[in-house]
Each structure stands twice: as C-alpha cells, then as structure tokens.
Length: 401
Image 1: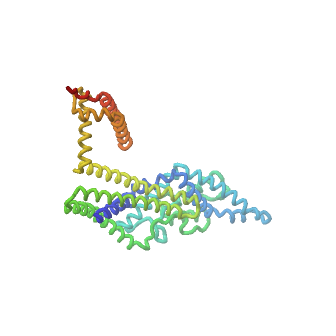
Image 2 (image 1 turned 90 degrees about the vertical axis):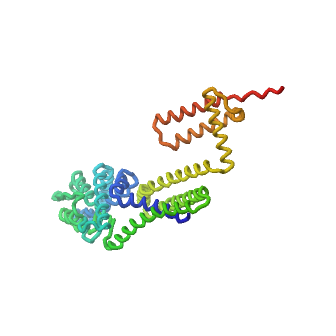
Image 3 (image 1 turned 120 degrees about the vertical axis):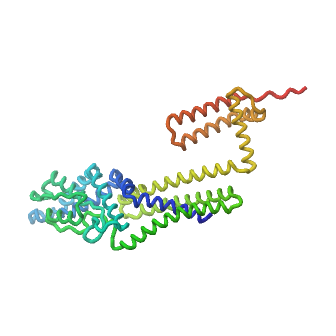
C-alpha cells in the first residue's frame, strides 16, 4: 500500500512536469501571459533599461559631447536621461508589441532546448558560446528604434538601426547592433541563458530516464493498488487505507509546493525581482495545486461511497433511515401513506430535514459546475423536498379501547 501511494504522488509530479515543462505549446501558454503581469513587467523593464543603457553608454557619450568645463554635468544629465529611457521602456513593455516579441522568444527558445534534449536536430538557434537563450535583442532593437524617433539625439543623427527579428540568430543580431551603434557589446547582450549545451549528454540521458520512469510509475501505481486489493481479505478496509495514504501523500505534496514556492520567491535580493519570481512560480505551480485539489476531492468522494456502501451497523441503520425518509417524502408528494414510524420521525425533525436538504443543495451548487438549467433543477428538487416535508404530518395516536 505504501508503494502504491508513493508511486501515485510521484506520478502526479511526473505528469505535471511533462505537460507543463516539456510541451512547447503548454509551456508557452504558461509563460507568455506573464507579459501582461505588472510584477513581471516591472522586473523586465528594469533589466531592459540596464541593457539599453549598456548599448548607449550615455555617460561616455555626454562626456565626449560636452565642453571640458561642463563635463562635470555628464553624470547628473546621464541619470536624468536614464530615467527618461526607463519610462519609455516601461511604456514599451506594457504594449502589445512586447507581448508578441516575448511570446515568440519563449517559443523559439523552448523549441530549441527540446530539440537538443531529444537529440532531434544538430542545427539549433544557439549563440556563439554554445548556449540556447531567451533572446531579448529584438525587444531592445524595438526600444532603441522608438527612442530614435522620440529623441533622435540619444542615438545620433547618423545611426540607422538594423532590422532584427525573433528569427535572427543571436550572435548575428548583436553584430548588427554593434555595427550600427559603433560600440562593442558583450556576447551575452540582451540574452537570458535557458540551456547550456556543455551538459548536453547528461541532460539527454536525464530526459530519457524521466520518460521511462514516468511510464514505470504509472504502471506501478496501478499494479501496486490492484495487488493490494487482490491479496487483501478485507478489501473495503484496504481500499480506505489506500485512499487515506494517497490523501496524506497529496497533502504533503501541497505543503512542499507551498514551502518551495516561498523559498524560490525569497531567493532574489531585489524586491521587484522577488515579485516577478512569485508570479512565475504561481503560473507553474497553480496547475499542480489545482490537480491536487481535484484529486483530494476524488479520493474523498470514493472514500464516502466506500463507507456508505459498507456493512458497518451504523451505516446500515443510516441507510435504512434515509431510505425510509425518501419513501415518506415520495408518498407525501403523491398523497400516499407510508410507515408510521418514519412519518413520525420526519414530523418531529421537520426543520432538521429541511436544513439538511438545503445544505446538500448548496454543496452541490458550490462543488459542481452546472449550467443554468442544472441550477434550476437542483433548486426545483430542493423546493419539492421542502414542500413535501411540510406536508408530512404525524399519524394520530392509536386509539385505545
């Protein structure tokens, strides 16, 4: 039973990882909406502002442009211009153009990484130092173009920026900007490394083992569960124990995810970066947390059914009582009599029965995604029960001679 529960929890993590981290379409769907999140935009705006300032080198530009006696003003003037640039960067990051470029950059980087990990292609988009990167050079080029339009003096009147698209190789894009700006740019300019092929063989082996292990875990989960039930002499009790163990494992997994999310979010030293990491963590952890909620609900539902259909004396008594109540309500609606004991019990507990029916209806409306006709059906059934219970009257006492 313990092995079945462990394999179940491991399988949940494996399926989540494969669906959300290895599938490009789903990975892009998780990451691309970050471009509309204020916390993420703030961190990206700060990072892009630093990259744009590296490309412009305003302090050197002003020091060269100002007369000797005015060069003392280079630093404060550069600070003011950097503030202006930051505002322009924030405006661009909040635009649809940035969202489009960001989505394409994420998709291409993930596709390249997966192709290398699966050893499906020998030609991928990599930078000159052998890394796959999240390429922000097209974003920086678009920002510089906008700055050139709004403030031509920042770039210089003779600067003509090149065309750089998300399909342009990283090294080639940096070379074009270097030539246009007449500045030496670092090899990692505008890039976030997402894969280093120096560990290619180890990563490929890890992916193959992950695929094999996930299949094995799914098979073992079913096998161990079925085996425990087959060899057990009290299968209902064994089923309940399996359900309890699985629920404990899922709850532990949720607590680990909460703790891990807090730890990852607290790692950056700058608050704005912490906020961005929190948003990213939530984007990836929320599907897994939602899956654990659904699984816990399913485990609870199976456990309830297993208990309510069991041979336990209190359950048998409750089933008889509920069946009697249901028959009495049905007969009350159809103006037919039923056994006096049940009718007397309902009449004596009329308010409790009505409150219980209303509570059950509220649970169904809260837990089940119903259409409007479905909601009306639930409310209609509740009304029928309430009216029927109101119509039930205790039978007259027996007449004694």
